[in-house]
Length: 110
Image (cartoon, rainbow, N blue to C red; front, side, top):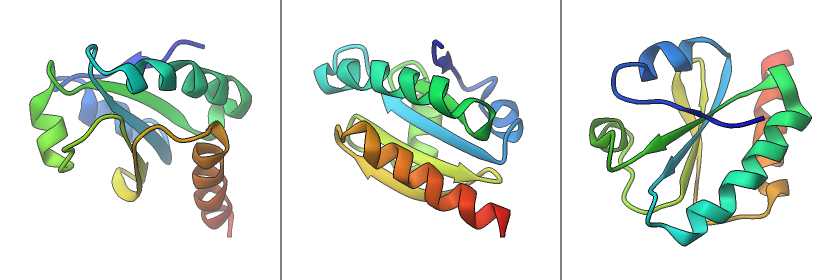
């Protein structure tokens, strides 16, 4: 599964398509960001429809990055119903992202 790249024109619509959306704020010049992409692609394959995973290039879409206060890359923000509920800054193991999603998908099921 490749990650969908979202931009200023599509972002609002993209985050409405799923109850949980994991947004990867990235930049092409960021080495840790490049290492994160395959982890998120694997996670997307494993979790399927439970979460939408989007990639936002902060240089191409600075308004979205500013809206969420992104200052460092990679920054991953989990949105629930379009609202931010968790944020991880820096490269983390895949299990950190999986745990974040599991925590909030379990809460959504209650």
